[in-house]
Amino acid sequence: MAEWSERYLYTESNVDKYAPESGGVYRLIYASENKYYVFYVGQSDNLHDRLKAHLAPSEPNECIKKYLHNYTCYFRFIKISSQTERDKVEKEEIEKFNPVCNSK
Image 1: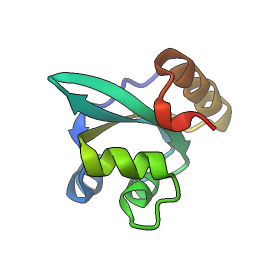
Image 2 (image 1 turned 120 degrees about the horizontal axis):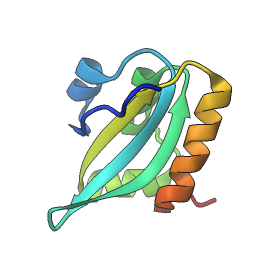
Image 3 (image 1 turned 135 degrees about the vertical axis):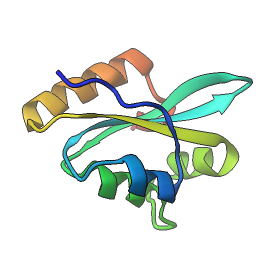
Image 4 (image 1 turned 60 degrees about the vertical axis):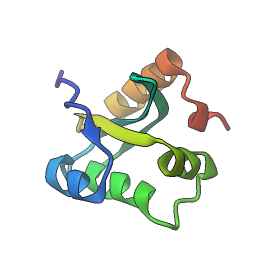
C-alpha cells in the first residue's frame, strides 16, 4: 500500500501544491505545545477538492472550523483508489486517533 504523505501546513497554497486529485484518506492535525493531534479523519475520491472545501467559509463542520481558526493546522494523506480500501483505512484511522471532529 502507499505511504502517508509528509505533514504539510494546511493552507490553500499547500493543498494546491501537494494534494493530488486522486482518491484517498486524509488526516487534519493541529499543533499544541510542540505536539501534534489528529482532529479529523476523512476520505474522498478527490483529495485536492475535499481538502480545499474544508478551508472554505461554507465548511459545515463547526468543529473543523474552530480548529482551523484557533490552531496552526496541518494535513497528511494517503492515496487509495479503491472505495472499499478507503472505507477500511478511514475506519481504522478513526478508531486509532478518535478525532474530536469525527464524533457525530
